[in-house]
Image (cartoon, rainbow over all chains, first blue to last red; front, side):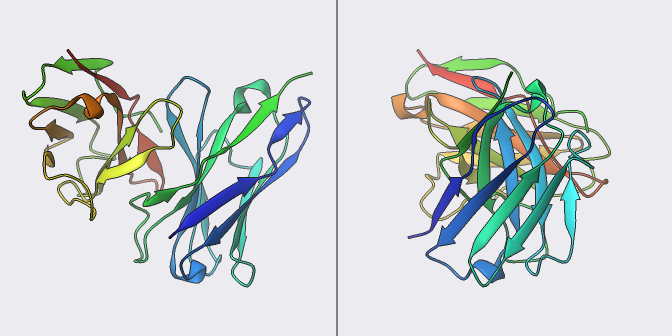
Length: 121
Length: 110
């Protein structure tokens, strides 16, 4: 059974930083592209970032480019998202997602349960 | 990266069919057959229902089907059931090498 377990969320002050982690089990992690998607509580979904299987290339939504950084450690089966220069607008549930085994950025095959990031003073 | 356009809500009676439209542009839905649909029940993570416009993952009911014409994609739910009551989101790859979601549609079973 595929499992994606996010951690690292919490309360952070505006301008602060946070690092999210996602441990993936039940499959060969290095065979898949990975993504982060966020959801404002009670609102819609926003794709945040995606990364290739070997971590050599990443792509970002305009709203987070230059502030967030996605990375992965295939030896540890773990995906990361570094969040910097946070503002209240970044408050959301952040989902870790298993992407495609092909060279496609879609679809979002499996989702974790999410970790809540709250940016507030 | 503007969101794809979905109706806020769609409703139907048990057994009926409903269709949710997802309107994009020539920068996302139009050029690619890379539209996906996700179902989200209250307080749950989203679940993949349709990918590559028309394909169903293993385990998804064949009551769910997808299509596309031009810049607009559609999700049809046939034989509507109470368990289908949820939010549905479309998503597409874009010409900017990014991905974009629709605003979500609440499906209500009357």
